[in-house]
Image 1 (cartoon, rainbow, N blue to C red):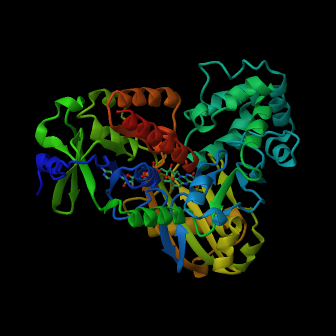
Image 2 (image 1 turned 180 degrees about the vertical axis):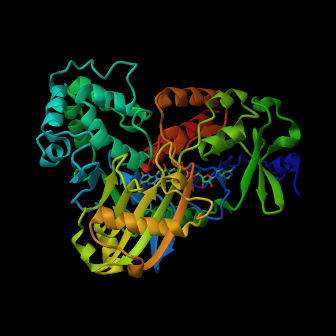
Image 3 (image 1 turned 60 degrees about the horizontal axis):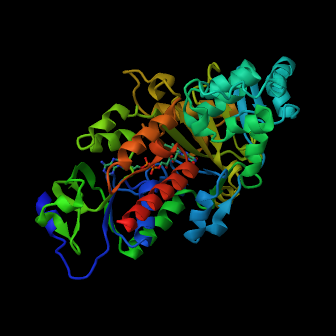
Length: 510
Ligand SMILES: Cc1cc2nc3c(=O)[nH]c(=O)nc-3n(C[C@H](O)[C@H](O)[C@H](O)COP(=O)(O)OP(=O)(O)OC[C@H]3O[C@@H](n4cnc5c(N)ncnc54)[C@H](O)[C@@H]3O)c2cc1C
């Protein structure tokens, strides 16, 4: 086993200036992208991923012979970050829009189509038939008060939860019947706790600019790429990870799957003070050393630049021994979610009875899922690959504050996950209005995402600015990932690129 000192010494001083060494911790989309951008900027890069597979939440699995996304399956088009990255990786042609049929929402009194021109379920057009159907006359009347309220309502500093903003401007019915199901389904969060500025940047500023919340939603939708608010990749989002990994391998980046970083050490912030034996590669000091574990092997790698691209609790856990100020910012783990994928042979589903899928409002009796995605109705490429009559349904379990095991009442007597498939079949039948039984099942899989979808609680942005301020005081440290940038690929990709660019610029100035 190497020790810390030999890790630094292994890179013996050379007479010519050598590229700087960067270590990336975490092989999700943010870590892989950071590795790519650092390599392009001339760094020697090593990337360490605790699990045996790359991509983190952008995962894949094979169900009934079809490779499907097991986590993220689309990206927001409010910025071009993901589409630009796809194009750089040669995947421009693969960017596809979902079926414009849109999704539905299941309210306590039954299913209705979800307004298509909303953000977080907040409607931009109160005259749209779907909005009228979901809210009823009294709900629409209350929501229309938004247009007459002063712009200060909901835009003061104190108001920043999604729920508070919507309640103040459009009323309780919009919140309960449109916003809560979308927020639960997409962010696994309670709108009372979700920070509106983090999940819909620019929305509150838009109220001041355009005069109402509905107008702000319309304006924000118009700034994105035309068409749908999300897009996907033909073949699945996981093909982005495959392309990134292939490129990193070809570029000679040090890829270390199955390597968990146990600890990171900082060897002094003043490069001039670094001990002689911790200087390497052209004499540049290596302020960071990571301590990795791979099975029974253990070792150390030294670097001038450390990128921590893990989930929040892991990042704070690794850095707090060296940066105790971070301890105060230990984030709560995200919710425990289970995704049940069913591949079924049910030709009646070719009619896509609930469009691309259905979100379930909290408190709907008898249905335990919080959302169902009808993946073959949503993505044409997938329907083409499975063929007519065969359908991919993905149901998610686990609302904020409710464990999936509670939601589906797994008792000590019936703790088997198989029960969740039976529950998913029953939920799918109810939600789609078409019987889907065990006899129709071609394959199924249950994927558990524990703590992977942290949501931005009120005050998130201010807190993350403080975390960035702590990190910025330390040379050669980059913190990135969903917990810093906000959930979702659009935020993670753009935030990671920004953070890496800043670190490269700082390294070049030194
Ligand atoms: C079920 C699900 C569905 C989603 N759907 C969508 C969607 O449709 N659209 C969308 O835009 N977003 C979606 N998201 C969110 C999006 O996938 C994430 O925001 C994004 O992928 C986060 O990427 P990341 O690299 O920051 O983190 P992660 O993907 O969590 O990667 C972090 C990596 O760090 C590794 N790691 C942790 N600790 C260590 C350590 N000590 N040493 C080494 N490695 C370590 C982990 O194993 C992990 O692979 C979804 C998320 C989930 C969970």
